[in-house]
Length: 595
Image (cartoon, rainbow, N blue to C red; front, side, top):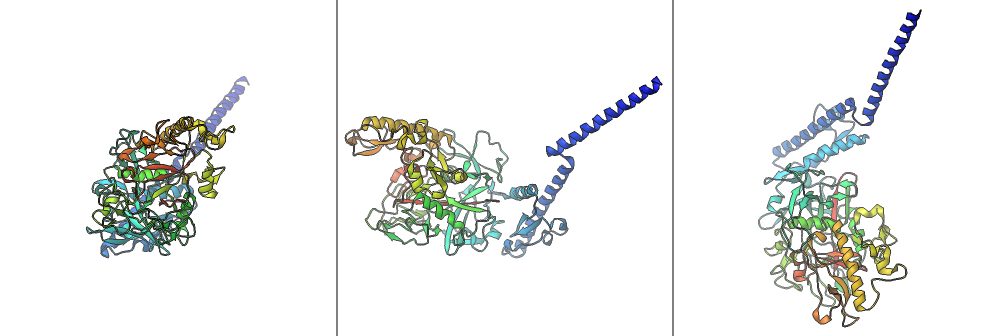
């Protein structure tokens, strides 16, 4: 009996051990599933990825064959419908995939599969032209028929390519030869030219100096942080202009010229402002027209966003976004310009100070780099497509971006986050609360933090009842202003890619001359007589750097038609954001899934 009883206990122990093992196996299976390491699911994902890559390749081969058969005249955007119409034998995916304007699109409800399709299709965005690899221009989601790729012959005569064919054609760009990709959108008669800035990382060997140097650029693959040529990017900075909120971009489209309007000949009391302070007009981006000026920075943001409206140049907001150029986006163009893929542009000198005849036109150069103040009709004015005119672009040829030196000062979407009332007065009202940018709209602005002493509005309108910025006599006030400006400028080091701190190491502050309370200038000394003149801080290429003004929270870039050697892609100045007759802007177009 005893033996029998021990046998029973032995069986129970074995059962217990087996039960524990089963529980451990089941727990491990659950953990693997929760950690997304389920072998069955992994196998399904691998199969799906492989199938998508194969289907995508076969779609491209189909389009290439049709182009070859039709002497390059086949419209790729006519490819619409089921995948099996173009790739026989894949009917199992007809319920969750389709071909839309020649591109493979996921239509199912599985978020993970949608991401895989976008990732795999996006990987085909890298091209090699002239031995250089980079992201080809993103034409996805842009309206067919109203969007064209643009190229020029050796005489700078323009021709266009349907975007379907352009997606497989590289004849219209070659970044190794400083030929940046160009398109135009033209909805409702509002034409806008755009230039493609591919995603890249950069390295400045000697940042925070006043001596300009060639910036090292490595183009990146798709929306990744991997160099297109497979090399290491150690020591490089991923340029922040290609991160838009939570979305990574393969590149951005920037306006080729300063913005103009649907009423470019509009005249105000100041002269030809090209539009004025209104949101009722549509943005155009054209050469040889009066630029849109006398508009607040907030209204510039509004009309830039309106380009995706039904009446705007782009005409759709589906997976596209237009907005006023941010400071880091300006920096992305400036840094590419300062690399082997671009060159320092000549000034646009078109303009004069004649009362009632304030005419500034887009896309012009003068007889030399720093020419200034050429009134309309001057024989030395050179249009964008002439021998001298192309030197005003960021590439030194017609394929670059114009008006980034001279022309009008350009508002960029940025703000000094010190609670200044001008922020609420002049920026887009719905984007601002308590004179600061709302969190939900932060992706549309570069927000700069002032020094600790200035935070919470202490410098401008009083902390504890003390208005630091405007306190005391000339000398003591200047000491305070210099200290506050220095603290703000030091914080600029926290922003990368914006062509401020990295491309300068000096700054001025805005103060009073010791000889008279009515005389003001940008100074560096705390006690300076007006007879000695101002002290304009200069950064790279001797461009002015007038930033950190506590009571001027907005920012202008590029200089003015009269700025001469002070103007350029690295020029910057603080401003209140109002509708100055000298102040213009330019938009940016972003393309990506779920923008």
